[in-house]
Length: 451
Image (cartoon, rainbow, N blue to C red; front, top):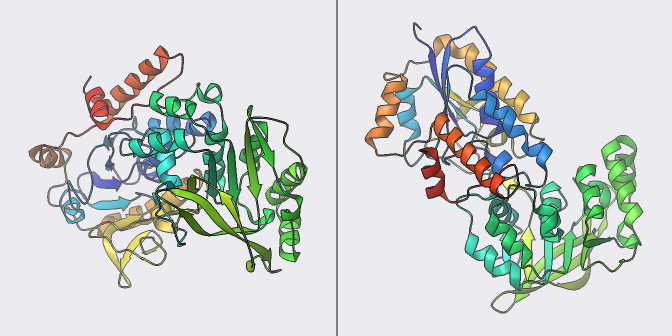
């Protein structure tokens, strides 16, 4: 090939940016990389999934942003693959396509009453408080000021994030980049009790210890743990003995067990061996029916038939993310991933030339942000190994692709446009004595991109 290899990356979250970095950091194959995203801004769940009060984790954005300074790498925002341009069309303009669009939808509980008003997905709640342009503002700005008791289903870090945001004072959140309407709504919250439910025991919870400990350090919230629910069976004891992180979590939870409230205005009830089986209410969810479970000795649980209810007018389900299909791309609906062999997309057992996958849509929603770096590098290695045999795109040039998008009237946000948005958010933050305030409205984002 006498020209640079043209590569499109669909998705600008960590896996997409790490894939772009891996391509731009090698010298064996000249490359030209366009990182496409449906949103006008890059970085995916680092921007719209990491809790705003976790500034050190969100600072990963600065590392990812440096990838866009590398020669041959461009951000192409506000372009939705499957709507503005089809996957088949990408093959006309790029020699290879890497799908890195992640797993951004929620998993459901599959119980009665799940669709009642006041029952929401953690993915939607997190999108709202992070300032996602497609977040349902009206729903959360209606629900939060009228709720007094919340149930969060799940015992992972997202459940902890949701509970912490609900329990914190606005003073504790005022330094973050949350949009002002989010802070104003949280200031009006009447929630006094937050119940975190896990169907298994404390050893099976997937918290990181740092995030878990934060729940016990909040200014206006006590944490309450029932000692009778801090139960370990043989499988749990083996986990504690073999995994230091699990051992630390169990130690923290045991330290809280039996501790009574100190009179703070909010209470976080951390529950184990508690499986929600139904939501009920009138025009809105009003209570959660919970079945007590017991450990079965092998890491699972079985129901006991003992039922209780928790008053709740807000229920947030936080039981995991799932990937979704993209038109024109093979999809395993059972595992919610794109099937692949060593990062090469596979259809009906056959590798599709020029198509690759990385990140959560490749392996499922597992690992931490850094996990995506090694994963993306492995997929890029497969792409580079194939470089000499890939079918050449007939219109593989920056100018030809730009002309396609321009001819369709798409308001593309390129790298300079993103940098203009970044500057505008920093200016908005400075007005409120913060580092940044997220611009949440799509039209405002597009306007800022042209400043």
